[in-house]
View 1 (cartoon, rainbow, N blue to C red):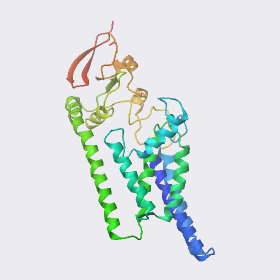
View 2 (view 1 turned 180 degrees about the vertical axis):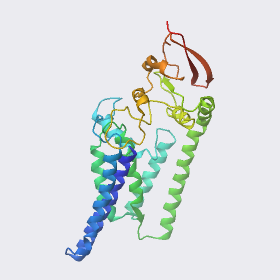
View 3 (view 1 turned 45 degrees about the vertical axis):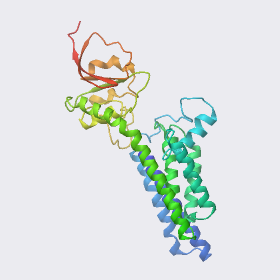
View 4 (view 1 turned 30 degrees about the vertical axis):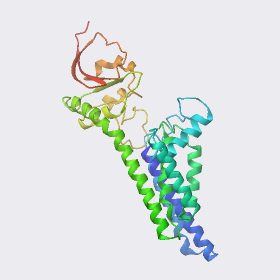
Length: 328
């Protein structure tokens, strides 16, 4: 996914170079050798990220699936594609918190007014990149070659590139000062919104980190999640990574994607541990692990071949050490 973003950055730079070439061509009205370096720079800016994406990305070998529209909620075109892409576009500002909705409306009102009065203008050299982005994100599937949320996470880049395309118009200093003040207020409110959302969760993060401290580095941790879901899904994985604990369902591939350079590749003895998600059905492999982390009270039946010894707990989880019973 991050390498996809690298490719999108290459598209932006290449589009900008194309705008420069067209601008200079219109001025000089003829092609000259001195202009050839511009399309060459555009080609390099585009090809290098694309080659990196196709050569380095674990999901670029076209062995994963491609899915159009998100896989939950109403399966309508509006909900699964249009609305979903819109949510991704505004996600840098609005993430379903009630406080952020008026903030988003306020920011949009400021931008519309500033653009209408030409207090803020769009850099003409960014029109081509923004148009290309519009096409890319219109056709972007939900899951691209096995990488999910492609159509949600990457559209947020449009917002940032859009911000970078804006500049001050030829207007009064007082009007510019007003817009600056209003945008600064929006920034303060957005940062405050993020802090207010994350501050109560610091205790949960601390619980995971404290509970996983006794686990020796190199241990194999089986994470199983209840059907009801839980908050901060990736926190136990990050806490385990700090301890050097192996969690099979993330940060690795399943040993099937063999072409290209794998940034995080399972060694042969661990290649068949990989799981898509910490489902309760994973309990069948419990004998292969050293510890069990139950999150969200999953409904599971522990095999008689193992015993569990509780070594830690938190508000939403229990950590067990797995003891192997004698074979019967």
